[in-house]
Length: 216
Image (tube, rainbow, N blue to C red; front, side, top):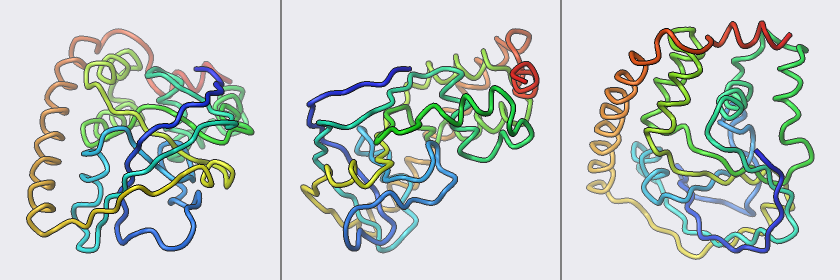
């Protein structure tokens, strides 16, 4: 995990349930992986699986200029999982503890977060970790094996102003049907792979509640 500064310009993708109206802004729902922001991914197919149930869904191709932005880059690991847990409201039992405050402040004053996506294949595994069914080692090894795509989350107006729309694609009924099938297949494949890894590490590592207690 590190704070970076770069002059890079990247091409990313954003899926919208009904299209972007007005200026791009950090106004996603609050309980997303990295908090409220404007979410973009490196993998074109990933946002498509999130919007395939919506008849007015649109996929945007974007150009993002990262110059002069303060960016938190976070790798797959326990801090990534805890940041997702914090933003999904899963750490409230440890509110005001040392570990809670540390995770809360990870992206302080940052314009953007770059990290891995908790995609279709990871939702179930993450919930198992949060619910105390698997350890941190089982989770982290599952994350590494599933080869998640990366997401860029614009947290501030400054970051959003660096985003330009290059292309907009509307999804047909046939597109959405195929994407639903792909999403279900990916989810099943990911769960099967993660189950095997979790069995291997079921006696190793710490559980979520133990990590929170140790972080007091």
